[in-house]
Length: 89
Image 1: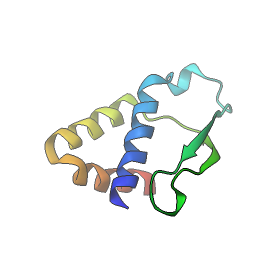
Image 2 (image 1 turned 120 degrees about the vertical axis):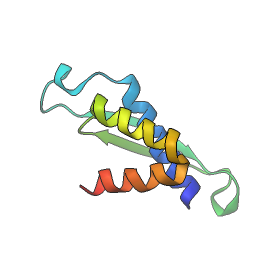
Image 3 (image 1 turned 90 degrees about the vertical axis):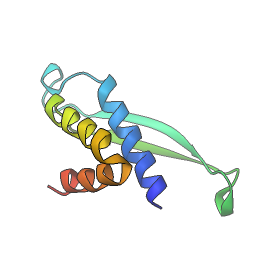
């Protein structure tokens, strides 16, 4: 479970690095990403399901630096702890 959560957090983190800054976009616009999840192993092995990810805010450059420093200093576990604090606030 922690590996999936970490993969999701890292994926979203990487996605924010390649997107425009929030002030460069219209204030009320959302980014909508459609994709397909492919199950690997287990009871969902070989099955596919569509998903939609709606991004309604972006991570600030300062917050990206903080999270990167947390990953470098404390590893994946500390990054997950820090991301949970950031997401819950």
